[in-house]
Image (cartoon, rainbow, N blue to C red; front, top):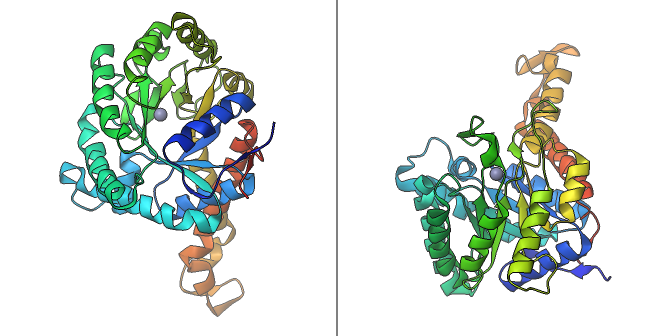
Length: 359
Ligand SMILES: [Zn+2]
């Protein structure tokens, strides 16, 4: 099958659905990387250029706030909204120079954070009025801690608003284990870490008539990286969900759902590969790319330790200046390269490396 051609820039509307369809046909998925600053955004876009594939760039609430500046007053999520809007404009302006398509997304949003997504949607609707395009490709709501009915009803309300400006909604059914961005699910009952296919069918029935959505279904996946053996991944849950929806609704489409794999960091490659066959189109990766950014920075600090003790004086002489080594650009770029390299590895694990035509 011919490689899918995708133009550089922010991917929105039906084009996003076409990309996910192509991913399911070719059994590949795109990495979704959490970013916090222009530095990690640029590293993400660099990796997409190297992999010749679109990238999913996402802000968590904490990431968006950090992009604005952690020390700002965040009453009513105003700094996190501004950080998310600023990040979106940064990416929109630069994606074409990097020559990469970007799916721009926000990560987990629990009920208490809804004012954040509300603010981003206000900005998105305003941008849509001006340009005919939404600011973001998609947002995620994570109401998985609530009753299924409440989760689906609130998701439906948001999807109605988002569909009008050609956006896609990501929902979560079942709970992703572990701890991320201040949400600690490391002690929840393990049965809740596995989504019931019947719940997926319920969500499908309500959301499908409204607009486009993806489902983060839990199959034992966990945020963070833990000792091997602590996490029992059961990707067959994803397969069962696809089959139930197809059978019950008499669909000809083999994989009617676009599925999202949260907690991709530290996952066994064999389980990742298996999940690709069941319609996973997006895999979130955060902890592994955090490590890939921090590790080379630490190596730099170790390597040039004796050049970083003072502004003047190093092993080459007491009067030698250290300006070149002190310049933050010298070590930030090492973090960026490390992060991009890890993302290229993720593309390879997800079978999307070289899978697209970006010409
Ligand atoms: Zn997640």
